[in-house]
Image (tube, rainbow, N blue to C red; front, side):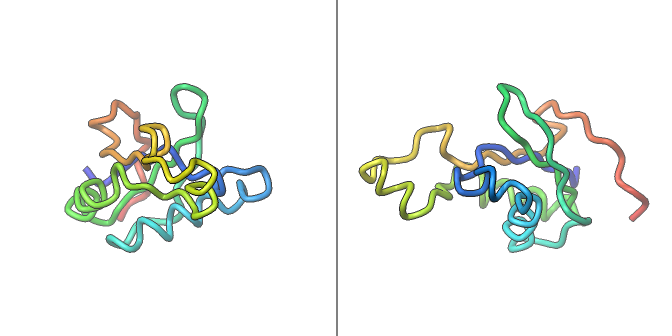
Length: 112
């Protein structure tokens, strides 16, 4: 499975002024692990938050991304300071899963 779904973005990424660049930010983060097919698609996730769906070029890269990035603290220095440097709450940790394992329906990507 090459598709991954991401949730729990840093506040700085989902602020109204920054929302337009959310796909690029997610793409930039995921491409550190491996190449992906195009920009991620953003949609409404469960619980009202946003989620991004991205397709890696290989299932191995998708698994590596989940292993590497799931649960990481992507808060900015300012966000950490505002929280008095408390450890991140679960809702503040980046959430990344293989889409099919997370129960997310994946539209088939173009031939690739």
